[in-house]
Image (cartoon, rainbow over all chains, first blue to last red; front, side, top):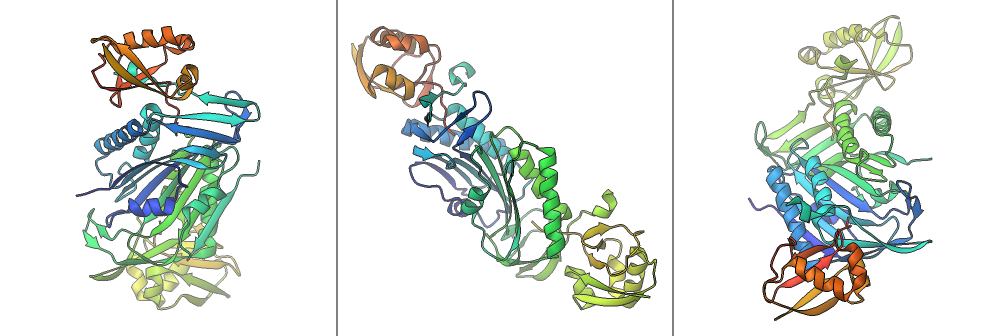
Length: 152
Length: 152
Length: 82
Length: 82
């Protein structure tokens, strides 16, 4: 069986319908598409407004790590069919979808929700992408709090 | 706070990007979109091929029950922002998205995955929609196995 | 006697041969009693009556619910949307 | 001595003032040793060195990893994509 795995770092607008079609097989009955979105207003932690985020990737390594995330998803949920992991980069305004984790299965009870959740958690842990927040109070780099060095 | 709840039974093609925009608020950072898809090949249970499904709804009751599902989602996951529940009806070919449960939150860890999962489970339990399967071996109505009468 | 209009869906419509039917029922008739009347008139319903679901005014109704005058009644098989 | 090319991202690039730098290192230098060299040359790195991550040939590398000749080395802060 040849299941599609789509990995992409792109400056293009995301097209969820086209993406879903790319991970839909004849035996697909369920899909979950997680999307991260630029928050214009944040209330958790230090409340603030954001007009846009500047995304930057260490592209070749990011692609390799996105592929690793997809491999881990398949290993943990062997019933997965198609997987798409997309990270949009560049300057993205509030309200814009930035990241997609999409996956498909024959039935909704064989890991499609769990895999998508795992995928976005891992993407935020190990894929070398950074964002700089730009808002009314100036700009600053957002830093993650996960240190893969300490995992191993 | 006025959070959007979109309920629709439609014969139109689904447009996930437009739908996502409709449930994205300034404070939205995460979305989960579950989609049910017409399976052309089924292997679980009695293996068979499907060329298309004919969907039929008891429309006014279905809309009320979809609204009930959305209300239940909000009650269980109070951090939910936008919710969209869409059921496409009519004749739908294999590979076509049929149902969407979309929901948004500020952060991905406040129930957005769980709510989408709950939403599709409940839709399949209580929303009066039926499908007739049409394949090379003839056509037959698919029946659910949930009896709400017995729940109450 | 009340005249009730009954909506039928999916297999039940096929068994009855019509999307809607009208029946005369006496005041106080329950969903259970209405199901008896339907099964007597349309014998193909007999074998599925245990799984038939009923709605009164677009809300699921139990067997013992009384059919109100002028209500919208529907019968259908277990739902299978999604 | 080997000449290594080092890629820098996000805050670290801002602190160093350049996307890439080249350094002479002796054979056997570890990521830890390379971090010492960088922090000595670019003092603003000192305060973030505990959270700096390193990659050798696009794979996360531990402090004790030896920098191979001709490798692609990158330093960056904890990732924050999504």
